[in-house]
Amino acid sequence: MKNIGAFFDIDGTLYREGLIAEIFKKLVKYEIIEPEKWYNDVRPEYQKWDKRQGNYDNYLLKMAGIYIEAVKGLHKSQVEFIAKRVVNQKGDRVYTFTRDRIKWHKEQGHKIIIISGSPQELVKEMAEKYGFDDFMGAVYTINEDDIYTGEVIAMWDSISKEKAVNDFQKLYDIDLNSSYAYGDTAGDFTMLGLVGNPICVNPTRELINKVLDNEIVSEKVQIVVERKDVIYSINPKNLQIL
Image (cartoon, rainbow, N blue to C red):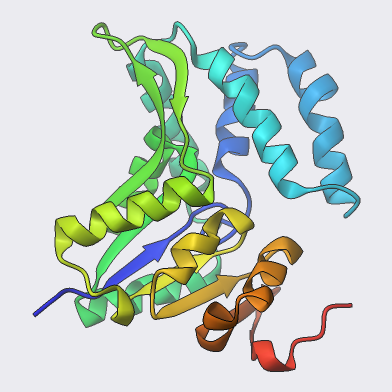
């Protein structure tokens, strides 16, 4: 009998913001990233998004680009130390809906797996904290001395996430038609489309548009929005975007 899987994005799906933003702030605090990089490069993108005038993905990608350069030359243990501190301090800032779904999937005996665009070190800490069976994040490559090279194997785009789901499907003999996936941005679309039970959690407009434009996905998707202490389930057929 095949396993049932549940694939979770982290940023904006489980964690209420972007985990990479938290490690970015720590790197600024420890003077690994110059404060000017935040104020001159990242903050403008954040402000655009915060005012709902910009794209959230642009904000995250701007940080990711600076992060690549910042960790270049650092030892793996340094980033692992910072990642552990971030999750110890911030790891409880998660959505109630997603946290409860993780618990439910565990009770059903499902394989629960994180596929996230956040750095692998952060994803590992979150996977351990919430008891995931496996995980995959963006891999910032290291050399034989465990020093970061300044290169990255991305995990924030649809192509990468699709490959990750298929790799885990083979590894754990997962029945995708009976499985679940949770995501919030366009980068999660292929992951959502591969399973029989896709759930959009606080989705971006771009993701909703992709879902509604795809008849197969729109027929099976569930849209969930959590605001304050209320969780809303929305039928895509009755959805009106204003």
